[in-house]
Length: 243
Length: 188
Image (cartoon, rainbow over all chains, first blue to last red):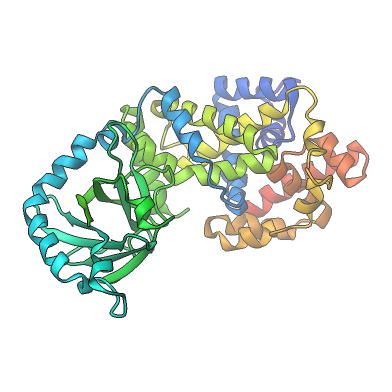
């Protein structure tokens, strides 16, 4: 088969190449030709423009998180990596806020009802809780989080959290483990509205037990697909055990 | 895929060419579910699709500098990398095994061909696929079925012949005529 100079044959083979029915050695030969011969390459691109939009009909399937980890290891980088994995980075952000945070925690200790639903039990039980105060980069506290020790509900109250376009973006809350180098764990997406709750994977006593700090990153709608923060960290701050 | 999204992906690819790992992470985040979906559909095995997709993203990272924004849209470029890698993968010895590999013993192609969910319906919903979707609808049913099985499920001519219970020459003709009619329809 002499393809070069034969526009009709080139077009036919390009169509079958892009569709996928050109197989075996013929496919490999044609692929090489498409790289070497500009006219053949162009015929292939034209057919790609015609047919590949059909891929829009294929359902998305989120790949398992290990795929990203394997890829990052293979490329020998930690994309968005070192920054996120370095607890120092998070802690520094948290420290800025710690002055205000301390004052706030005292306030919360005195007024846990600020968060807790009105009908939740006695003060002794309320005091057995986790409280986190998250600040922006200027140290201004913009988000409070509160969870009773045995509850899987994390209560949130915003005050000056930057609004996001919910159709494309989300704010994701992360727990930062104490061990150096351990990756942050997603706690869930911050709900829209001034107050709201996040349903934790388990009771706060398990989920937040070894979490010295929380952080919020800006993610695409639905949250990070890689299992790690991928967008900028907007807020962070210490998480206190309150008993 | 709207133009704004394509522009964003184009910028991310250009940043990848400058070895910006954060841009690569974002590119992965924005495209991996679609590309994985494509690979799973063609290969019908998630473990293979994972392996293929890993290779593809390595390719994308390594060849980002060779991506020419003037020649094709970023999604087209990445989709073609994944589809070509999947089809190469199926060239490995004994690809027929894949077809009989459904765990419940059913033929996975039947489920696909029966349209669950209907790819034509899905296509009609995707705005950038409107033209090709309209033209597909105008094909004869047998041509359309052959083309869609080849495109979405990676069936070769002989697999199409076996699946559609037709002589090889017949399905080859369906595919060829179907493609030429698609081309004509898309030109108008």
